Length: 147
Image 1 (tube, rainbow, N blue to C red):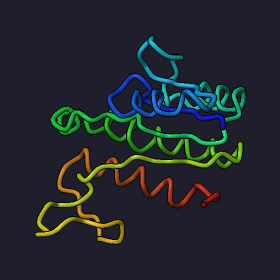
Image 2: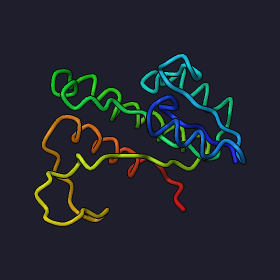
Image 3: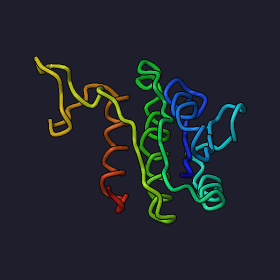
């Protein structure tokens, strides 16, 4: 299979790259130069790359994860975590790729006394969680191909 992995030089993205590389065709993108430099917030550059490589699956691990930084710069948090995710979701629809979106437990408020599940109601209490939840909403509303 042909995979596109965002945030490929990050902690989670690099694991996906290592685990999938032996039996799959991997295209890693990141804002760091160790992979193909593509900024997910730059829609046209992203779409051009996605159309060029035609991935079957996009694994989206890129994010602005600095929780304190998100509080100081909410616009940056939303630009990366929400708008960048929206760009990828739209690219999935355009190319027919499946999308795996990695969110965060920060979409919950932490008040539940047992583990959260996918059906629990989100209630983020900070900008990071709110921006990631907005990304989830874009994926849910825009990606039309499900397994």
